[in-house]
Image (cartoon, rainbow, N blue to C red; front, side):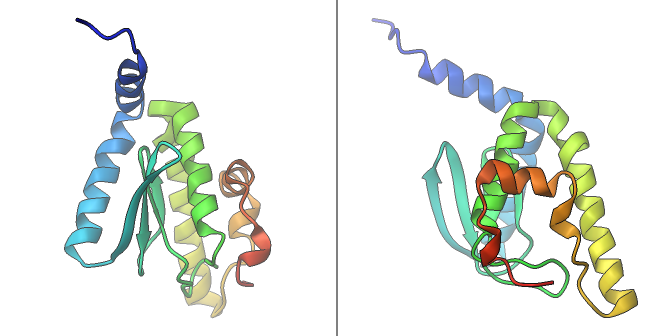
Length: 150
C-alpha cells in the first residue's frame, strides 16, 4: 500500500531546492568531524544543528554549524546559534539563489572584517549591521545583547 503522507516528498523537494548549499554543508560537516571540532549534533527545527568547539560558523542548507566561541575578527557569542539559524531560513526561502545572494556578501563581509583587524588592530563593529547579517539576526531572533562587543 502506498502512503498518502506527502511529508517525505516535501523533504525531498527541500533537499533539491537547497542542493548547492546542502552539498557544501555536508562537506563542511565532514571536515569539522575530521578535525575533531564537533561538540554536538542534533536534528532541530528541520535542520542538522552542529555545535562546534571552535571554527567558522556557517549555515549551508540543512546544515547549521555554529559556535559560542568568540574570535578576533567577528564578535561571536551565545547568540550565534540563532544567527546561523536565521541564515538557514534565508537558504530555505532563496534556494539555489542563497549562495550568490547571501553567501557571497556574507563571505565578503568576513574578508573585510579580517582585513580591518589586520590593518587597524581592532574588530570591525559593523559586521552585523548590514545585509545579509542583520537580516539573519532578525529571522533567527538572535538576542544581540549576548554578542560580545566589537
